[in-house]
Image (tube, rainbow, N blue to C red):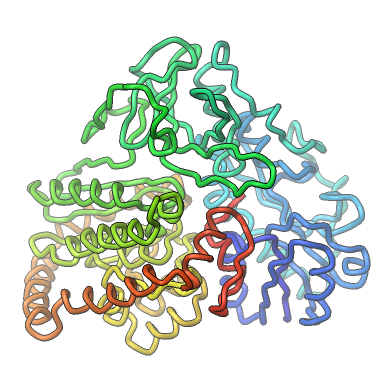
Length: 571
């Protein structure tokens, strides 16, 4: 069929639906349509058999949905209505939730149901939930709805035919007045729900050190205590703040700006508070926190027999210069451990999206910070690529893009959760790319496919990545089961005799590579291209970066679509 996807942003769910439907041989067009009139123009241009809206904030005009079937993906169970469905679910602590694919009608979210899927809600932030359980359920429901539509015989059911989940109802938008934290009286669990319901957008508006901020991210802390609302400590860019009965870690802040002023950058909390933050103790992260202890740290290491697991989780998958350097230090330390297999990643959400565009945009000299950041990424990738004394596995539980994909490709094997979306390209941000991609990508998929992937700049499903050799193994499981699946698979791998044979071949390959096409040559050539972009104020990268960070429209001469700006914009 000819299917038109209409979306307010080309976010992770839209990308996944696009890729999955295309793999099923449908002809799929995508239009980022912020207004109803844009939907009309898109329909006239593409003349689709079916419209699907994976994430649409605009109202579909009546003349469109009366003439053609338009399926709306609503992140809530049957009977739930309103624009803040997932926010309410997280803030109220729902134990079970769902996704409904319904037909567009005059009343929002009230149309006949084509498919619905329910799921258990884990104790995670909204954006993580959206990219994980919600995306899995949405894809299942969309594929079922599309098949039902294609059959020509299915009649969608009115919502009254369903038994709704308890509490399902029409609810208003979740406003900042509903999200506000009372530090004197709110428990840690209440604060966490409010913070997680606002992640990654819009954040929780709050006052701190004489200024209004939006707080992003929240993690419980069991040990530190203080007067409610008091700042207690810092840790690798995050701040710890006391609640009525405990404390929470807040990794990121965004300053509130006035009308007519550019949107502020979302930054590591201590960087955002630079010049305002009082002297606070920097509480070091434990390499291996006690089992069951609630705290926050973005890098963790553990061992299971002959396998080391180096997990990392950076907000939004963005890796600034400091993130890269700390992860490199942790990687080098892990390489001193007596293990035969080292797993990099393995968490349920983002693996990595490459350099930290917000930190770069906020820097006094964005070109210089871009240069420092890409070199720090290169140092990390080089360390993985040149590890020859153990077998390295990259485990991608969520999504990965740009330099984050290339970081994964530096390992000997790449494992991927079945629901992951990969974007192995840089073009949509106006960059040539580095992280040794000119070596690792062609080595895995061939020169022609590498050129196509970086040129077309299209998202890949895990199955498509496996088929072309970009990844080596797919783990078919839910987001919450990924870490356990990785652990079992890695422990099994470590005892196979073939591992030692592959290590010997790896050393021989490294020696041959350095004699014929040294890694240093790839890095030098890539960085020369990147440096010319960073140092050119007219390069599209600067306008695209600013537009992505500030949520503005990009005006460039580089022929790069505004849809590029939404690649990490979820919820």
